[in-house]
Image (cartoon, rainbow, N blue to C red; front, side, top):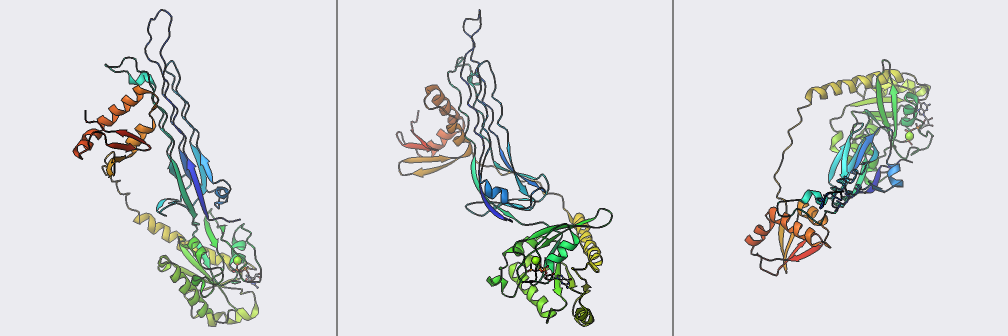
Length: 417
Ligand SMILES: Nc1nc2c(ncn2[C@@H]2O[C@H](COP(=O)(O)OP(=O)(O)OP(=O)(O)O)[C@@H](O)[C@H]2O)c(=O)[nH]1
Ligand SMILES: [Mg+2]
């Protein structure tokens, strides 16, 4: 089964809790704090691999989780980091945000990764909170929860050559004659229901990846036949191979139909080089028509996908066109633009009917890592928020004593002291 769209939920590992403990040693009357830090939770990544060719595996497993970090221990023992979780996806996978459809990543190279959810930070043990004013802190941080995200994955095959043609033109027959792929072949229209990829081997270790897609008919872009959605699989091929049956009653009309449907699907095809193959030349009547049909096409190739006749000549030409385009691209490749860093305030403050709501990664993290059962931990949180300038900012906004300050799912009262 070929699956080219899938929804997936990922949950990164939570950080381990920091430990609160004190040294107990013989002959040392009062040992200092010795609670170790929790380990960071595992991250979740999407990783592109050429071992997969569809998103089928993701369909079967739609929720992926990374392990949490271990908790810190006494005697300054730090918890182990949770291992990262790698989700393998096929080359050509687009990662989009579920709610907005925003494109986040386009994984096209073997091993390319995208950080899908970040593991939570490990909580600090009490040993880390020793200060001049507090030599024996009796609290530790909790581990931060791991991020949770939902994505839509979409696959766009990556091939050098995309074959377009009416149903029955012989597209799948051609693919099976040049590669080890075994697409279904039959003498009825719409035999191919989903794209097939094949790799053709030429001499000297040269290869071409070729995509065979379902047949296109007039009106495909209005949903006729199998529609035209599968055309996105050849959106990023280097060359379009038009496969036209030499026995076609109106080969030029067929080409115009194909052109029209391509144009209606995407403007991306407009400047893509085209190569024309007139197929089924093994049939005697077809061979007799070749000269007449050929004059309306730019440099057409006469082939027989079924017998393999002149298929190698066509392949060499395709390779030549692809290779030239690859070289041109290498020359064009500009230096990757330097990444821009924008300053982001650590939080935003929004007025609410009974006070203020504070949002931001750092404040959220601080709150989530606080053990609210422990007064000392809560005081530590207040101290951190103060250092982030939060109380001064609230004051500037006119916060009054007794007003509610909401962060994440906790609320506290504002006091101006
Ligand atoms: N004589 C002859 N028959 C061919 C040739 N190529 C394909 N055929 C036949 O044409 C019919 C259609 O071939 P397919 O390869 O399934 O055509 P397709 O373009 O993939 O068709 P769809 O998947 O339906 O779009 C089959 O019966 C093939 O055996 C050829 O070169 N010569
Ligand atoms: Mg087919």
